[in-house]
Length: 327
Ligand code: PMV
Image 1 (cartoon, rainbow, N blue to C red):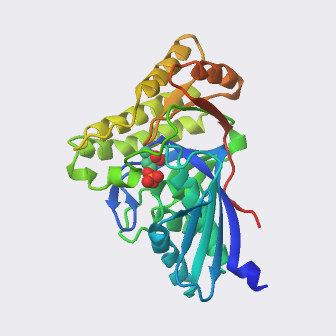
Image 2 (cartoon, rainbow, N blue to C red):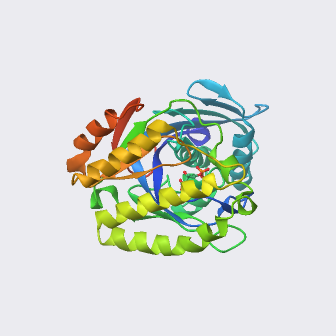
Image 3 (cartoon, rainbow, N blue to C red):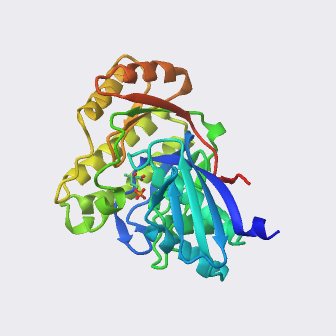
């Protein structure tokens, strides 16, 4: 029917990188300067409905029931329209089951869900790689949220971005791990990741070192995931996180995403470790701390983080599935 070709709702789960992406080798195509490896989270997701309307004058975008400036989404929808050969405007309605724009990767799940819903609504049926390349142009980390479990994003070397896509490494069920998110601030962050990383190359003395060590970090992470070596995966993830924040802090002007509770939660994770609990932290462009542990330790980790002064709330998650169409 006309309805089924012109509307689609999709769900994509959020992801967090174990080896971080920061910096672009091309701003327009959002080509990453480094590859990355992430895990997809079951408990945090975006549902996005796209309906193309013949005759509508402009795109409209609602996130969590609130009207949002459609400009960044129009640029993305134009890629879909060009590919499908249609000129209809879209109504986009998106809903996150977690706080938006606060370092919980809402741009990753949101753009992944939008890429899947918009292409299907436009009558396209892209394969996983093409969809990942498209989602990357919404937000770099969104290329990873199309897949479940452990995911690798390739930096690529081509100028057209045709080899800068993500692909699955291991399904969630192949190595169950849990994540406990310690929320230390519910407000949207002041400097989003796109703004934070643009023009970075000339703005941190550490940037060249960051880029030149990335391949070695990715190799080490790939190997330790294949070996299911949790201690090495965790240690590499913590190191990549701290390197990322060192890079952010060394950018001019320096970006500081942490608050006192962020630091206290990091120290709580290390204190658990010295008591014999296998748990490691990671942090993105925001103040929330994400602790990773084998499922038998999740209750202990959640209880410890909930007791850290300044931690407002905790969320726990298992590893999640690939993005899918809801109707
Ligand atoms: O692609 P963006 O704009 O969501 O940037 C992602 C940046 C980090 O979350 C800090 C790192 C990462 O690899 O997810």
